[in-house]
Length: 139
Image (tube, rainbow, N blue to C red; front, side, top):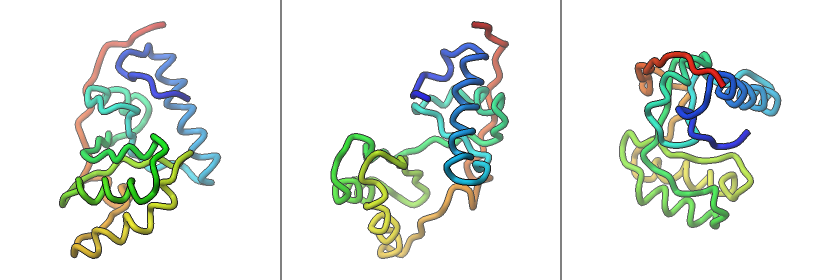
């Protein structure tokens, strides 16, 4: 799976991309993913893609510490804590990067500021967006 611009894909390519990611997530996590889709780019216009793939919620983010770029865990943490505000959604990646090493500090940061870190899956209704529909597109 890659990071394509979902709105540019035909229906079959979209199904392959999203279905493949769903299958990988299920395989590696041991369970079905939560019903929230995070598009590979910040394109809010792919609500139809989320809906077509069976995800009722499209989640975008407002903080990107660029953890995927190979930076140190301390830099990931510093960038996230500097940019995050109450209600922020932070984009983080599972790997390959230093994000797992940064997570304890990232989670502790909001607590130290009398805030909380929350799992998206714990509050999916807060992120619910109405999907935008489009006509079918063949390859």
